[in-house]
Length: 97
Image (cartoon, rainbow, N blue to C red):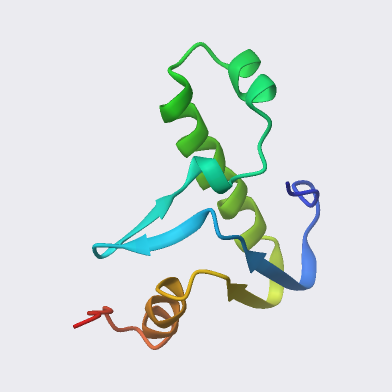
């Protein structure tokens, strides 16, 4: 769960949880590994739970990765996501093969 949605930080550090993965050339979100409470998810919007959970996780990640002003440091727990992020940082597409 994030807590910096209203702050802009000079530098930010983010650990991207195991719920964010890189599979088949795409970033995917694993709801089973997310810490979002199902009661919160069900009570917030009238859309199917799976779609909302995916949307909520994307929004949380977006908020965390856009709070920095001067620099962002992050670490991805998912081992397949790590090289994809390094390739993106270098302006390249990642191909695991």
